[in-house]
Length: 454
Ligand code: NAD
Ligand code: UGA
Image (cartoon, rainbow, N blue to C red):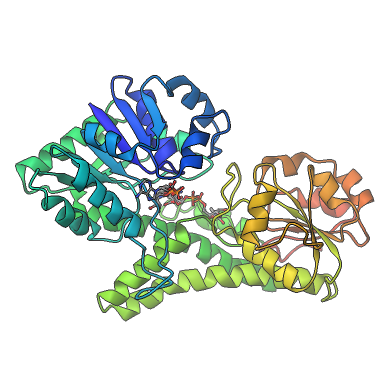
């Protein structure tokens, strides 16, 4: 069996690496039109940072895993073609700002139709609006070659991608359950995953349920974060502690403890995009009340980010002009170099609008990426890029912790306090530091939803 995956991004790269690792008899070709990205996958400096990824890539690359720009050849030789390209929010025309831009998916379907000499199983791995498989089918059916289209959305989270892929809660495969060929295609894809995933964790549905389940899962996860963030504002107003509330609430087995960490708001390439897409679909199907309900989740996220940056400005005497702020962390979460939709972007833009000086430190995000995200020129005097968190904190009025990197927990805070201006502020946007210790050292401190800090 040969597998081709179109799209060597955060999903295509790690997912195919694990498939190649678990199925040594299957040749896996990951192809992309982006030459720099493919070159990086073929180098020691992979384009994606994920714990454990580099080790597996070095084991399987050149054995049964190959990265290349030769899209056509890989499609032609494959039995199963995964489409794992980006499906960003549309920025133009009808649905701009909420609908998904499916132009990359459509061009993959056209390419498959054009170069294939035999029918294949085509798998939607990208997150798609419900009923996208119809678009792909319509294009492929023009060939008369007999393609089967499956939906197999990916549930990995960045930072834990390899662990998630090796041991997923579930694998979802949607297909045409009503036809013999459809059922056969579902069974073929399932047999790949069954090499390492127990069969009972592989859920089989019709196409539309599978496509919609992915959007719904992300919407539910984002909703939990917005719910606890909403409560965090109330905690601050009342003296309650959001972590204590989350523990008490999450101990109810009907609610569960996960995804109840109050924060500066969720980021990442998918929650916002998929929520907006869900809102768009509801509006499209004339369900305005449902659309409004889900839009509220996104509104709360925006509120949480701006509430945080406003709090920083307020605490620093409503004036941060010319003041040095140490920005600790820029990635949208820990253990990734990804900054897409990172809450750090909006928060730092707010600080720059107030003419603050920002000293950045992130262990994995490059200076170039931060400049790009904040639209900064190379000679912008308001920013500095530091090699350690200590350097960033030197002469700073405040430390703003935006990403929950483990290393921030184990620093010498006595040394840091000494090097800072007084009063020395810490704004812990992830509630990840030892607040008691910091208060004892004389820092002024704000967490998220910590109404009890003095
Ligand atoms: P990405 O932007 O990192 O990668 C997409 C890749 O596809 C890019 O390298 C791009 O060059 C390539 N591409 C685009 N059009 C192409 C074409 N016609 N031919 C060949 N290559 C093409 O995106 P990603 O983060 O990997 O996400 C991919 C999909 O998976 C999205 O739909 C996303 O919603 C979904 N998803 C992402 C995650 C995640 O954690 N990032 C998790 C689950 C699902
Ligand atoms: C999320 C989902 O968890 C994956 O299942 C899904 O496959 C993926 O989106 C996708 O479709 O792209 P990801 O965005 O990589 O994964 O990371 P998460 O761990 O979900 O974190 C998302 C954001 O929420 C981060 O900014 C994180 O810091 C924040 N978060 C998470 C909180 O603020 N509080 C929490 O309790 C959990």
